[in-house]
Image 1: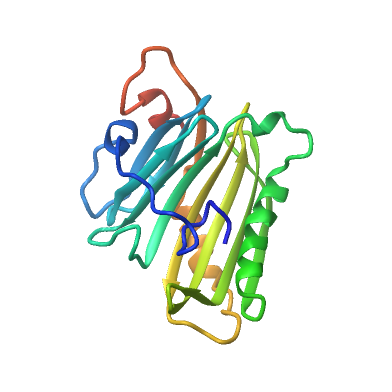
Image 2: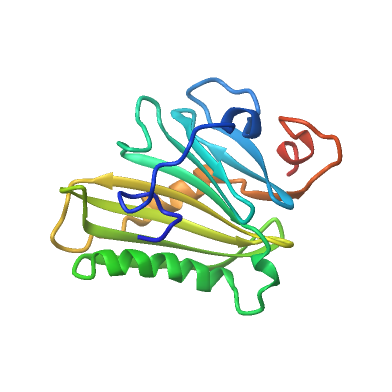
Length: 217
């Protein structure tokens, strides 16, 4: 599978630095919270259900990844995971588009499970005025470390001012020899649960919880 959808084919990442970087507005544990994270040239905001907790974060000069899992789970053993990634400078590439990157991620799924692959496109969308593309992909059977399971993911790709971002909600379940049926209500609901999804300019000297973005409508 592609680098930005965690599976057994993706290396585990360090937890170091996640909590100081990821800022969330206060909310009861059972309610959604608005998370705002500085990723390269912009702030990225999205909503997180209250039963998810920070699990891992890693950043290099060119790539960023942040992962959240259900409370009590880990990046090595999970049933649901929300992942934010950033790719620095990719918006300057004239050949890069949100659709192309989303289909590349989907292609990684298809290569991993050609007999049980399923993909559904939500098509081109606008998020905070930025071009974006969303799809849902799934493997009926993904075999990781000898443990067959199904894996599905909502993948949202956004073209920022200078960088590209992806927001993904993945889940694992029982393995299936045939492609999983697309559950439109579930995945459109999860898209809504992540909303509002925002890209905001950085404000000099602003600190967590980054109110300029968190309070932006």
